Picture 1 (tube, rainbow, N blue to C red):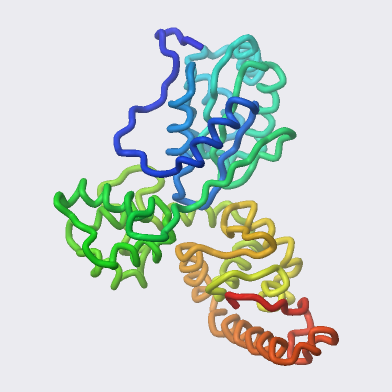
Picture 2 (picture 1 turned 60 degrees about the vertical axis):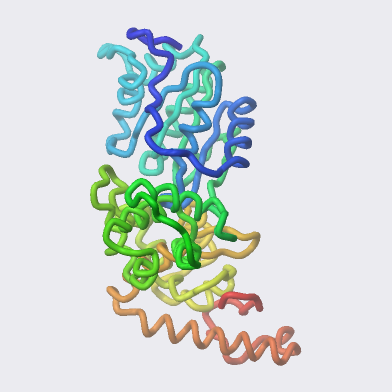
Length: 372
């Protein structure tokens, strides 16, 4: 598609090196060639937008980016998309109809970036576009899938932190050299720092920016207050700080989901839905297994089969809220009780059949497993 200015797209120029993600790029490229709707999901700051732009830039033909983080009114969604692709306004007709008709015979890739706060209007409009325009492909970035039939979801994971030459360390080193020429990863502090940051690209980039004043080891020593440390001085936009990025996810949760998020912060490792219910359920919070699934759908939790875990930055944010609502000691005590009961079950396997008399009655049976 060529707009009135003769452009075949509006993708921004790359301003920094894209590192890693070879498998993600290959899979997203394959999906975009085969599927009309692809959604990239993942936790705050994991690099969904950057991956979408890189994958789109490697495809032939035009690609049009529509940035939606600043749009709060779903009724204006079609107008925002139309403006991005150079479509004139037509006040006499619904803009969604005008947009769908305009795209009907086009072949193009439309990137809708940051849709999680506009899920319903995005779902409705994307469905209308895809029905009217078989030549259009839509690539969505969102912390939650749209939920449309035929949507293919690709979850973007944090970068692996496995060794001194892994993608997370390479990204940190590249960004560090931009602010501190000659920087060398000469000890294990960088690897340990990348692990503490869970391989999340935004956190790695913000940490690298602090090397103007601190060493990697000093950064590691201050990681107990990661939100103050990773304040992103000099950055612009909604991801200027790590707290802003995580807080955006918090705003999109219901009160019940926020309460469970806070309570789940006592788990340092993986857990299953039964363990979450045993520790977190009470008269204020019912239906915990369903809420756990909803938090995973919103990229607050990461799924590992039937188990879940929370990244360090999400856990720290939840722990702050747990302290704020005055439940830190209460829920930590429940977690200790659960862990002790679990150990008793592990030492006395016959209790698995009859249940442990020490468990809390309002929740499910604890399941053995790591990370409790």
